[in-house]
Length: 120
Image (cartoon, rainbow, N blue to C red; front, side, top):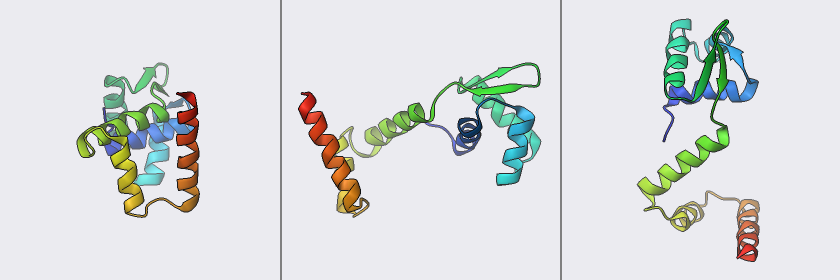
């Protein structure tokens, strides 16, 4: 599953601030992105229909029903399937080969791999 960019914008506000009214979300996204209130309400309704948020009355209170971590997992899995034949090692090799990881990040990755190896 993958969030559309506009759905992600809605979710980011709720992840940052917790439960909010639709009006409060509209104010934040109006300031950040110049969205009209109707655009925000349309996207909130769409997110609710997909189960990403829960909508409650009064005041159309919105609560995130999926965490940022869950969405990251969905999107990482989708990326692995679509671009790397499901292979995490190909993804990591791609990042290392393009020098997208700093030495500190590579050391952290290596430590994570050692910990995984110790679990097996």
